[in-house]
Length: 557
Image (tube, rainbow, N blue to C red; front, side):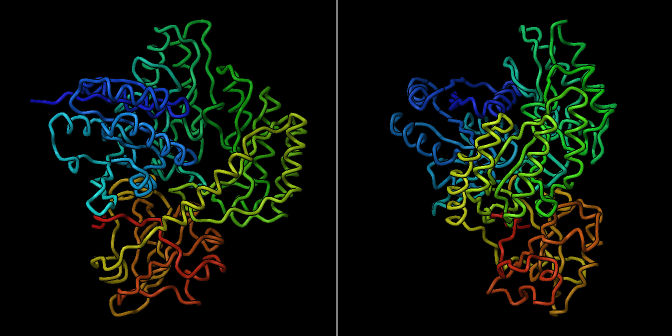
């Protein structure tokens, strides 16, 4: 006989989008469950105690800066509820740092996209089946180690709605082909765009209008990339989307596109694109990602553009009646006072053109290539200038609070160093047997069993079983398709800021060389001083930077 399951959600305004998607998946799949929403720790504990269901599943979702505060809330809820319930944490932080989550007191961590996982988990609880059968989980073993189950699939976005019976921004794109080194999005959801169909979006809007809603907003990493598989906007697809949404809205309906909670890339801001938006959207502002006024920092961070399109984007947006809100991040790794001065100069110039500057402090976010990177020092002169821009009304943001978060995140990264598994069995690879092994499981923050993350990690040096060096170009050619990420034992691995297909030494400058060295493996040797890994990597990099594709136990295949 199936057990009744009550799903209790620690419901917080900061993370409603993801929670709504999980609840919509349960409802769409027809999984029977009781639902209770706790808006405070105390209310959450009350719901846990009040339900008569045989099994209680408590959902938590949070971003990395909130992890410490949420762990304190978890302890409160457990104390008030007498330890009842199975607590699971999901989202970008749990995906990237499952061991941290388990150590902090959660029973389970949800890894990757949660829709399939929540359906399988509730059904397993109903049937009293082992949780090891549920994909997309990290489960504490007898030694306290977070062991992962099989990966959850990355499905087309139309497979599940953004929400049912509720309201909020509609997720129109998941995943991102732009692998910015500071951003969790591509590493959580994969390095390819997956777009929701216009028909599915219209269905959402139709339901919202039926509930009396007249405003529509969207969730997407880059608004003008809708409908496009690559770097260039497909304005025809964007117009089909906006026109379809407009048809579903009442006469007083409003569309907000390219504003919060989404943004546009600067190189996508063209006169043609702005004229298109003016025909359909109600927002008077656009959020544009600049991130830095230093071309050197932009290249190191993998943004894929320099400062020139930022200036053009602000000018073009302002000429077409939009006020640009331009994101800047201060304190990115390797940033110098000269780089910060360039950012402040660009910010002031953009403010003179009519922009507002949204200031951020770099945070070493889990799951990103810069998780372990040291934030650059932000001197008093830079802080004073940011305050001056804010006092003029030309800047806003929570950069001081983010600086506090950065300290905590850096401390957590040091407490949980990423490890490289040793002694993995050899497999066939380019240049000879015994040199390459394919990593299964999940990229930290996203990716499927074959790690379809374009251009993130490629081999630049390898040795075969005889100890002979494999030419780096052979391996690079193997990755021209950009569909597999492989790690090589005894190799330097290069974490690229752009697609592998864009070869050439200039694409690799400043990237981190990663040595997959292990003391007990006779076939492993770190990159030598004259190797491609050393020459193309950072000169000041430690000899053994941790591999960003390191799996946890049980992931190798």
